[in-house]
Amino acid sequence: MKKAEYHVKGMHCIGCSMGISKLLKRQKGVDNVDMQLPQSSFTITYDDKQIDHQGIVATVAKLGYQAELRE
Image 1 (tube, rainbow, N blue to C red):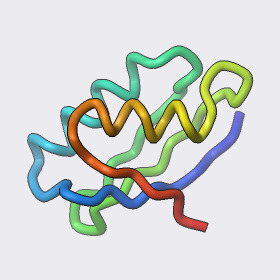
Image 2: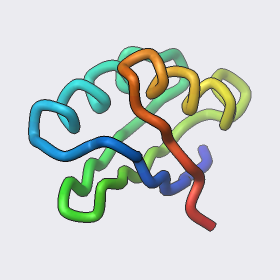
Image 3: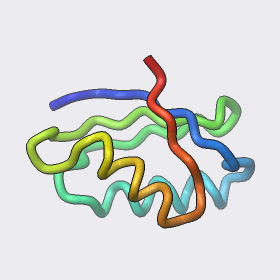
Image 4: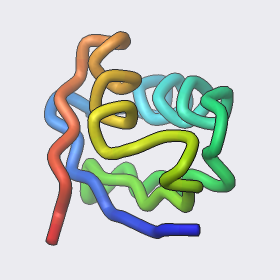
């Protein structure tokens, strides 16, 4: 399992964070998503054999947000 933190542009309310979390958790390989609304970010634990960085970014983009990996 890998763990990564992403910043999300445009996430400004609890509805935004809940929608992103719910959609990410439905993706194959995603183990856990921890949303941090005040920081407009989330930490995700995932199996990189089933989903990768591009898959995570694309999933968030489906809801109209832009996710950027924090390093």
